[in-house]
Image (cartoon, rainbow, N blue to C red; front, top):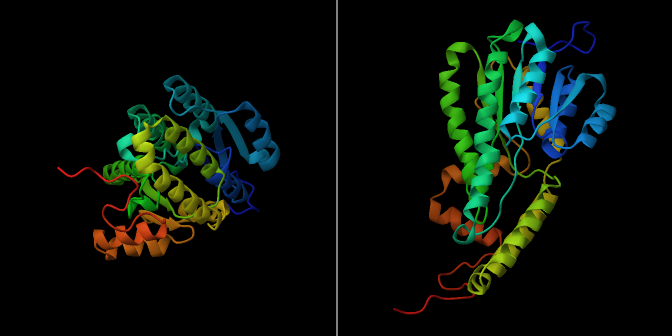
Length: 309
């Protein structure tokens, strides 16, 4: 399937993008509007509706959506159905997400559940609601579901266990879905960003600081220095990452391709990290990551050692 050229008189295919107010989602919407797609862009704040419309023009159709709220999901999907009509939906970009950071030992289970609620359960709920629209109209046997996973498909980072686990779960569900939808002609793709420069790291810093303050003093002593060091090093990598527009252009390639691949790495360090994650033994790669993030490299070198038994 080839999309209409900018000179074409016919309107472009409909694409549903979640989390479009900033960062990667906003870059997706920008790139797709430039590519003559009509973008149903979901946001959480009403102010973002007017901002997106002003920035991206007549090919963007912003909708309010809280992906974790069932009624909000149903309302947004009903609005999408009214927009696309009999023409149907060409692609769903499952992009909305959050990042919970902290040591697994100290992570509140409610925070872990929320990570999975946003990054896994809400994404699958939208797939279930929008599949009828993907099977409808002129793109019925050429549609796409693109799940924003991450480089954590190849490697898990310390203190990002919740985020990495959720992204890996989404990837696993997407793998199953890809096989189940093969006979329908719908392609399921894992988008795997590596280092991308966005504002999301500021939210991670704030949430990790709040978690650290809530820890008992013994856990603060054990993990505080390591967590602060990790966040600082990770933020430094984030500042040196690729701009979100790189991901937007990758998404355009996915939607323009006749036969998209099942995985698309994008962003700085993606190829290197994926290669190392597949090529190195866990013990070697773990040691490399500890050194990369300035974490203790020897047993018993953390600030609090366990007592001898």
